[in-house]
Length: 84
Image (cartoon, rainbow, N blue to C red; front, side, top):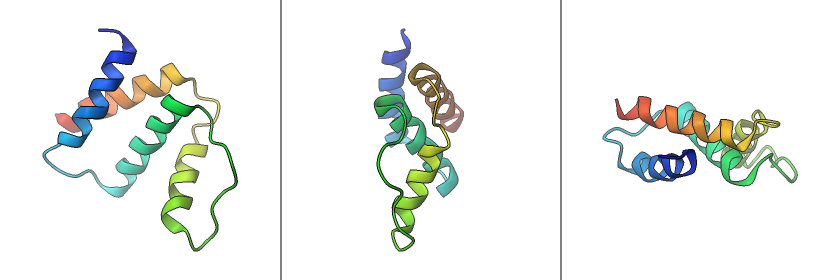
């Protein structure tokens, strides 16, 4: 199976996890998914009152410069670990 197919499968599987991941893991999943599909973060950082959006932006920004393939592989590996 090629990486793109594995990534797409993992994106479906993550919604079927038996247990909801903790917030840090959810942020990591979000950031890896965005880096994989859109590349480096764009736009302005959300303000202090938009705490959730700001946390998502910051998590994604930490991956700046990470290749899409590397982000996809990390996402697939994380979902596999979560599935057990």
